[in-house]
Amino acid sequence: MATSPPDPTLPAGEERAGRGERPERDAAGLGRARAAAFVVPALLLIAAFLVFPALWTIYLGLTDYRLTGLAAVDPQVVGLDNFERALDDDGFTNSLGLTLQFVVGSAVIGQAGLGFAIAWVLRNRRGFGRRLIEAMVLLAWILPSSVIAFLWIALLDRDDGTLNALLSTPGTAWLLEHPMLSIVVFNIWRGTAFSMMLYAAALGNVPPSHLETARLAGASSPQQLRDVVFPRIRGHVLTNLLLISLWTFNDFTPFLLTGGGPEDRTEIMPVFIYRTALFGGELGFGAAISVLMLLINLVIAVVYVRLLRRRKDPA
Image (cartoon, rainbow, N blue to C red; front, side):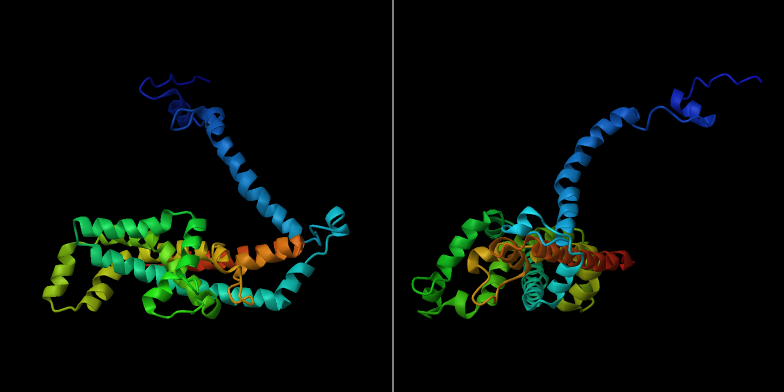
């Protein structure tokens, strides 16, 4: 059976693909072996630092593994006992409730709201004032957590704290009398920069002519935000809420401020896991709580992703 001569105008791989044969090279011209050589290192890092720790945590959650004693030498598989114990544990319920308060107060309301407010006020500003405000907000975000915690402990100190001096409230122990409010405000101050930058970029995509048209039509500022701005930046808002919610849910920094106290009133879930697994020595139980925490994070992510997919582009 005669075969047609090769087409000199086509690359060898495409010409063979046209005859039903598999091409030897991909679109980049690397070939499978060389393309795999670029991908494999990244896959190995993901497996070593994400997949293996996750699988190991799930395995530990199914055992009675402890830091000391016989269970440290010869841990036994206990199945779902740790998960059932966690769901019935008052400490877990308390930490979950405190974590939700912390996320809603400091991330969803505080960081998102203050970040948008700063971006909205500065959207048309230029000059030294804007750069100064942005630098101050960014500085709180890039400083190490340990440094920020030390500064806030000095700010809220009962005897010589700066806040008491400013408010003329000597002797007020903010971290003891208002611990949850203290860490919420602390986290708002520390994390607002991300929301501010994301909203500033989003507002830059809103055509000024649309706002001017709405203003000439008699729309007030709240109406402009509702009818013009938010429909165009809805995707940015949801993305920001997703990221800061997950970051705040897994944030350990408040431990540097309060240590989970007083009387477990700031024992959010990362702190509860730390105190259970390391201070209490119950690594199996702590791992089970970590898995439950991961599932809660997945639920939060799925909710936001579904909202993102359902959003409609403005006409």
